[in-house]
Image (tube, one colour):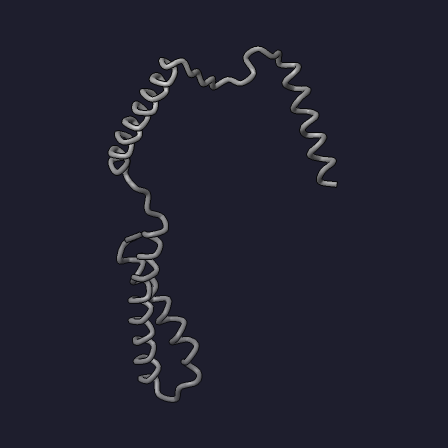
Length: 124
């Protein structure tokens, strides 16, 4: 839960004050204003618990300890994938991660530029 109980007391004080000053001139008996203002303070005190709970839920940041098991699983999956890739390259099938190893960077830039120009003309 976000904050402390002092937020609840501040909300109760503000709720009491707003309700009391808004009904002070309307009521002929001050006791009715005090009772209804006290009820407003209690309601705002309890309502602040909901607000604090919501803020705690929204602002919650999990610890790194929660992700250690995910890191271990990711590492195992990565090792399995590397094992499959090395097995595939042993069988004569080679998968290259770099597609443009034999082309120069100027040629790649020209290809990208023509693709962008074709994309722009297609949009118009």
